[in-house]
Amino acid sequence: MKPTLPSWNNGPVRSAIEDFVSGVVAPGGPQFVAPSERIAVFDNDGTLWAEYPMFAQVCFSHEKLRELIVATPALAGKRAYKAMLAGDMAALKAMPKQEVFEPALAVHAGMTVPQFQADVAEWLGRSQHPRYQRGFDTCYYQPQVELLEYLRAHGFKTFIATGGGIEFVRAVSQRLYGIPPEQVIGSSTRAKFDFAGGHAEIVKLAELGSFDDRDEKPVNIELHIGRRPILAFGNSDGDLAMLRYVLGGKGPNLALLLRHDDDAREAAYDRDFHVSPLDQALDAAGKEGIHVVSMQRDWTRIFP
Amino acid sequence: MKPTLPSWNNGPVRSAIEDFVSGVVAPGGPQFVAPSERIAVFDNDGTLWAEYPMFAQVCFSHEKLRELIVATPALAGKRAYKAMLAGDMAALKAMPKQEVFEPALAVHAGMTVPQFQADVAEWLGRSQHPRYQRGFDTCYYQPQVELLEYLRAHGFKTFIATGGGIEFVRAVSQRLYGIPPEQVIGSSTRAKFDFAGGHAEIVKLAELGSFDDRDEKPVNIELHIGRRPILAFGNSDGDLAMLRYVLGGKGPNLALLLRHDDDAREAAYDRDFHVSPLDQALDAAGKEGIHVVSMQRDWTRIFP
Image 1 (cartoon, rainbow over the protein chains, first blue to last red):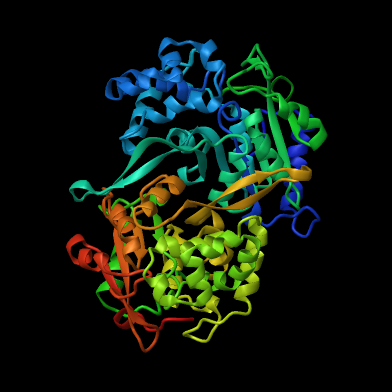
Image 2: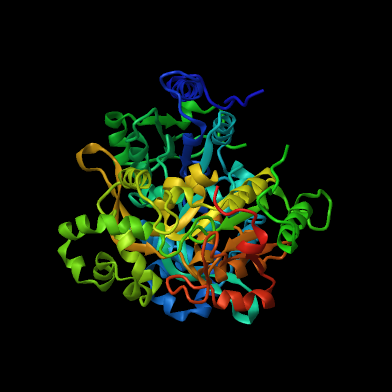
């Protein structure tokens, strides 16, 4: 039996998804899309799991930051590091998102990816989300996991395109979303090949490689996937370029934007969330054919 | 019926491949590898198709170069462009491979990827390999296509890790090798998101993003795939780091190096091919457990 969408309410959004998928898989129909072209991309923070009041990776980094500053004292002078150590959310919110992410990306400099991911797994195993009082890795959205499974059951290949660190998200993507690491695109640090002692490792450097946000998202999607997705799901202005890229395709496509409007069950924020606002994208949605998904209206439940 | 390797002669290399794969797929056996970890990476030029006396992409670029120099006269002063226009192979051979590739990567600046790939397809449809007097896209190696199919039939996910341009190779990878674009890693130019006129496109820039050769190959493999492959197949010093990366894995692994030693059926070159020599890797092979594949000894035929 094919997966359905039990945590999605009947309504215009669910119908738009089901109608789109039915058209895509109908052989010989006007909306048919070959399986190889059924590419779907999802943002992660705020789209697949909770991001409010702060990204999981930033919380993780806060803990790792003290160790890093001991090893690299020059970093202590940078305002994002200082603000993070002090827990100064107001200062962080006033900084560009890229600057806020920098410490998050730097905490694994000098480590191999498996070492870094072991750290992430260890932290996830004992940390609690500050707002929901449950493990971060249980703060993913049940309706989205159902949607991912539903898409895959209809021949879609599902990808993540995240502003978060690529290895951080890869540490959970298979377990939480059924998405293997090679289908995760994200922000990255540069890395180097190390063959010291005759043993080959990839070692992460502190230098930023790509900040996978806004215009860089579709650019990285092209770099990693090599074709235009036909479905994209985001939740912030950082996802607008990716949604527009999908809408610019010649064939059938679907662009979705999650609105956090459910303070009782999750959080209500959009234009005023300075770390990652939903502002321009919300204005563009109606004009450009982006479907706004309301947590309150469209989802019967939020977390698993 | 599972694919076999009809174009591979019996011998130590074929046995090594078959023994490796048998071990990897044997449930409960000491060499068993979970399907998700069965990642195989192949170089392209000289490994999957002919590269001698010059990479296909360089031949393609030669034709496109005159148009480019009309549009961007400053490029005419660069020695790689000059040498290429003059067909001065000796000068090109004396330059670093990265410099030789620069014109090849620059010819699609300002184009979208579909526009560039349409150009590639048009060129492939009418061009002839200078040595073999047949279309470049028929100069791929039949034994390698069989090996790719054999690996996939045993649960492997096959990737290309090429020093060539990522979009150039993606233009042929599905048709020649059964490898979809999202499983091709390669050299890349930077690109930008363009939303002029309300229509979203990714436009390629002349600036080099990554030159996917030598140490950069395993670094890009980690960036795109996120786990260490268990099989790698190359043919030049540019592939040695990738082979070492595979050999550094904790579980079973197989590293293969193709030696062009068959002047009658293809070409005989290795240490003296300045564009892409097989020199250090050949010295390392015996010491480090890399299997050297001889075209002459191991393949019953070369081209399809």
